[in-house]
Image (tube, rainbow, N blue to C red; front, top):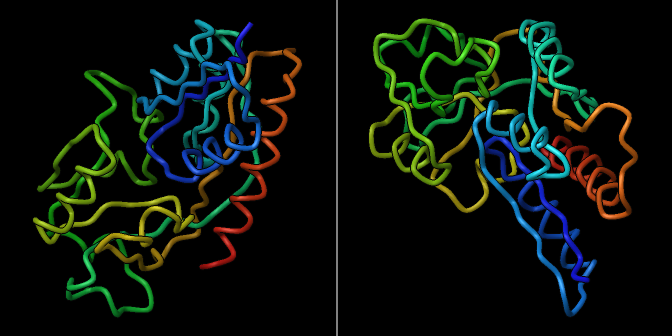
Length: 218
């Protein structure tokens, strides 16, 4: 019987790199692995429906109560791995790029690019900190590469996890701290009471280590 292992996550590269490291180490001649980029609701649905073994999402102190309530309602629970400060991601040529920190109000007038969560998605399902803040210029997309390209092409910005891998590495984007005390809570979602398989345990351990490593670059 082939090895099976699947992860669903919001649009972060740290879970992609972790997944690749785990399945590469697992090896084997007969396996079926899967990694899915999803909306928050999509992550929840995949883990509930056993399409994926685990989900990778983020919360904030503001979104956590309602998001955890929704997870519990469908038999899931969130496990915190790392906290990080959100950052503004913007093109390296942007006029705000050399500031020591940026207040969100200073970005008014620049296009804000974010990941669409689907029609009628509640505010606590946003991937980005401050996702519910009203903006005059907002552009939704569903693809990680498209988001980066749009930010550069439109001289816009997005809000990231503060874990810099995938945002600065190999792209034309850089990040600047946001003047805020809000924290992002990064972690994984599993079915309540479930025991993690060997591959799941390795994924969680590697994800935790990677989050620590990438966060140390800030």
